[in-house]
Image (cartoon, rainbow, N blue to C red; front, side, top):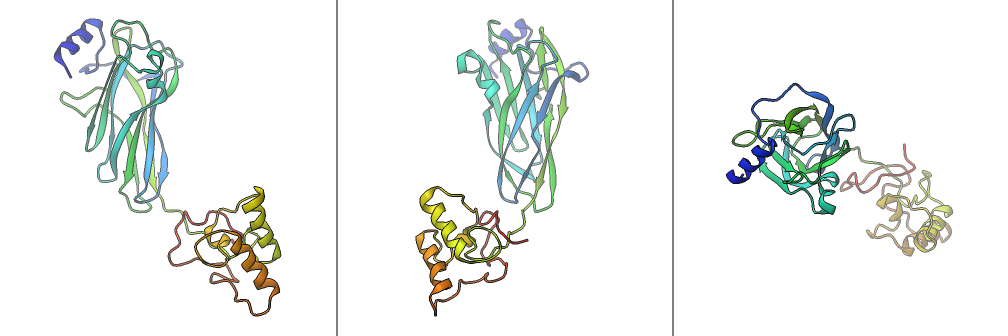
Length: 270
């Protein structure tokens, strides 16, 4: 950080790097978001403030730490509350830095005291991560005062004093949802294939009818697309002798070897 700017901030009583702060104040609560993400997936975690029980603030600083073996920090961005100052242009001073195990933030809303954060609740920053954990593992993210040289303290500035925020860590669970079984051609997700499924598909495709979010159920003819041919395939199978039956899984519930959790979220199968 620029030394001249630091001197200016010190004169103003705004401490972005503090060596001595008071005990955690329950009137200023900083929370990192809790979430569930699939192994190898990405997740965005909010860092939020709730100062509705407190006083107006001139600025804040903090680090958000994570286990670099569990999560990879891809990027950070300002939240809606941070962006709201100066008519949407953001704070006068807004410094961020990224590290292998977290990021730091330092904000001074106005260098001349023209604007402050009133008692508020909202998102300050958003961290975008990739999950490096195996299925079933858990990790935490949370405010910290160990990142940077010198370390950036987790404080909010009230009347020129550095107040330590109450900190609520976030928990990130690595969880791969189970694969949903289905019956091929079961467009209306009632567990069976019959005339109603073909009509359901036509209503979905051409009349804005309800859609069943299951690629395999809708792909009655197994050509990897969902169109009118799938409804025609069902009608032909039901009423024209010699029509081949749908490919597996059919007539019983099942899955396909290449199926992913995203391929089918709703079906008529238990």
